[in-house]
Amino acid sequence: MANANGTPIWFELTTPDQDAAQKFYTAVTGWSVAPSPTPEHGGYRLAGPGTTGVAGLMTPPAGMPAGQGGWSIYFASDDVDAMTDAVKSLGGAVIFGPMDIPQVGRFAVCSDPQGVTFSIMKGASPEDSQAFKQGAGNHGHGVWIELATPDPDAAIDFYSALFGWSKQGGMPMGELGEYSFIGRAKDDCPGAVMSSVATGAKARWNWYILVSDIDAAIETAKAGGGTLIQGPDEIPGGDYSANLTDAQGFEIGVVGARGQG
Image 1 (cartoon, rainbow, N blue to C red):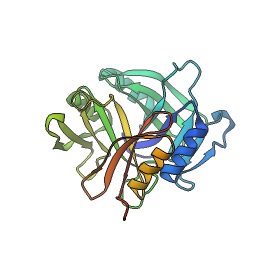
Image 2: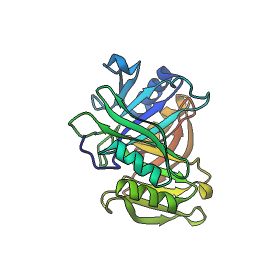
Image 3: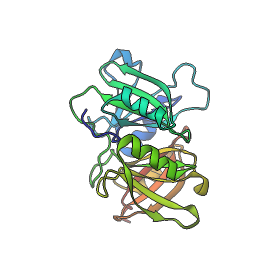
Image 4: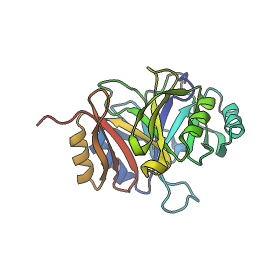
């Protein structure tokens, strides 16, 4: 993959019930889900719109504490080993790896100086990842990422040094602080950073999937055992965003237009 460093290139759900997760996300997002064709992947499932891979569904690995899991984001790296060295030199930590995944690529699981986990990967495919694809009509793709952190300024400094990002303006949220946009340029922002202390959000990376009708997605999620945490709230451009939990309690964001009628 030749995606620029820091591009979100894969999303992964670790869940104790793959079947329930598959049922929930296919209903809410319109994804198709299929087993990985590679036996070494041990029951890993591939999800996305049509035949485009956007996300993976997996069961907890051996030794993972009960109650852990949820969504994680993989960011592009042109050199995973060099980037793990950079993570450590910038005050972060390497939790696992680097290691190779057969027919997928080389990856590592890291944490930033505030303890928020993320993964980096250099994909083996010559094709760019299409998991994150901003723009109208890209239903089922990731279109926004969001970091809630106890120290937004320090987090922006860390990810800017690691990925070549910088702060690209922000949106004041009153007592909740600033919603700071991050990316390579004003027209190349994958997401934003906000204060987990001021907002009360869990310190973590979240991501948002584009859906065709956000009201329908919310009602489908609730009917499938999920919960609406926040929204729908209007965002720049006229769409709306919402945060949900799935039937296992793992948080996910959705973005889309309001239903007509």
